[in-house]
Image (cartoon, rainbow, N blue to C red):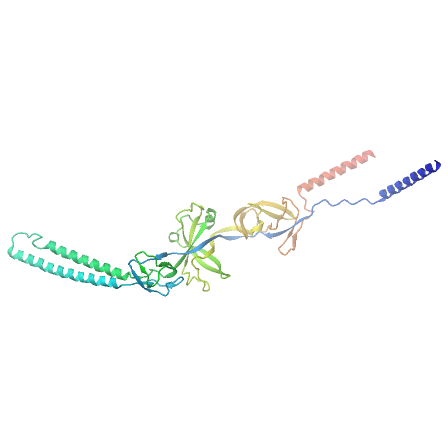
Length: 425
């Protein structure tokens, strides 16, 4: 029993000693420093806002179409005896060049018969004219009073003249049919397709092929109401009435190479498309296979092209990277001293690359073009240029009104604490 009590006393004494040593170590440990709770400035990329005169442009797309495209058909019947070697898919031809020749033997015979009828009618008219003159002469010698038209053979003379006119018309019709055995186009162009060949019998209206003109190519460009405002053109635009057309640059990739053609918008459609609610502007390119061809590459029919249309000019505008726009009408500006400011701007137009605004910033101000999470007025930032060099950083010497109020409140609190301590002393 005595040994148990002794061991208990020793354990209690050891515990007291250990607790005392732990208390001494805790009391002598240095007080930990308080971590800085102020947020670090956010690094952002900026670009200066420069005021300049901006020429607005509108981007659209369309397909190149020929001004004139027709189905080539004969006006007479017969067997095809000749086909032009260039009358094939993709072939070129000149205006009036014979593309298809139809057998003309029957039509030559018809011309001969009509010529004979004309000769007979002319002879009959000459005979009737002589008899009419003779009747008039005899009446002057033997007759009394006024002679009747029948006595003077005037109806017979009129009938002979009518017969001659009809014979001449028949001859002219036969000659036209003979000319129509030679099928041609009234314009220079290219062959899109051919549907008839040598030896085939064709009737009037039988399709021989499809051809189109190469003098002018048309591109229909859809424009919204907003884009019409950027161009500054009326809905019923017509270059013939307004003066000059609107320049347009057409681009496309052919064989892996970018190509460019210059054209002009000459008019707009007569009505707005009821399905898409857009108005089509008509761009024209003259001589697309000749003078307008870029580096020998023509603006081929059927090619889908991009169009850059020159619009009106805006003075005192600001051009910024598209990344500067936040939402619909806001940008972020780096204020002096490293503080962020959210601005509402008036957006004139924007594209995938640039933003044009007319108000909301001033010349020389640094506009933020990099993403900022949770952006708000007064946020602390560090401005960097495109090379990553620091332009400006947050400065603690520049205090916001909220910071000044906080400092004054802390000073009053410390003063109150000191007075309380003096009173207690």
